[in-house]
Length: 445
Image (tube, rainbow, N blue to C red; front, side, top):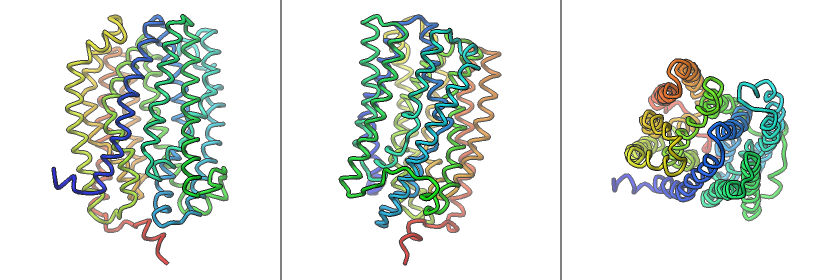
């Protein structure tokens, strides 16, 4: 263990993950607090409708948006290492342009699809118009350029601050709606405001950091002109966009699909279980956010980034086991305290999903390693196969076994994701001598 932590890059990954972890612990607690106020302030039926509206907006944004933060890390980080500030500006301009274009498309898609799905989602006339209003927040959910900038310049402390701001505002708004007895509309509006303010804070942090470093005129949206100056940019953004859209269908759409098959009440239970799952899987997400920028500074032909991935996976897996044991102990009383006895059935779902927590945490480095090696298309194929299988299982298991079947389908989907992604990772590792070191190529005369 002492030898493992003597690696400076590994220590940087842990340090940045600690920054994010400090805010995510607070964020998870505040997120549970917001859900608690909503669960106690609304009937189970209306709580399910609130969850469906929020999940619908997030699902549309996840499905449409480009993963521009990955574009900034993939191309911007090597450009900063080689001090190629002009290329870094082009990357930011291209990324910003994609955020604006995809945000506009996402709003239109969300509003046009909602009338067709409103009956299946359990929306009445009043909640339908609130859902239409909520769709206007989608551009704030789409934009990912600011977080890419902050990751590329190693300002994870600012990301940590922003990540705690949104759930804090949501918890405050939910408390006001609960004690002020503002009803369903109050919760929708307070959740909307928290997303809008939190998203704006990201942009302000990114703009301030660019100005401090003297990187001026970067936040000017351009698409085709900037893309022509970045080799392979369009291929990368389309591949990662499709891969993430598939991920969104598997994750963000899960509560929506459960609501369509089993109704809003089941969607509410599944959302509570997913909230615990997301909170328990936070350490892996934090490690991934700090792991990807660091390995983009390393040569993929050497053993170092791959060994870093192995060490990070083992660390995350060990933490996952501890987290799963903690959830077994505190899950049931915590649900009873936070949500009330009427939601205790969610604990049964959490017990099924505990193994998925460990599996997903062990497999977190695989996506970053494949992107580092330029094998994003291999990751896309693995995601497509795993997600298609998961969606089929989710619909079938929900139909035949109820909401418990949805939990078993989620566990199966996580296992398929890690197993199918490991195949191209292993192949790329064995043929790593054929890879190209992007930073070396760009900095050569």
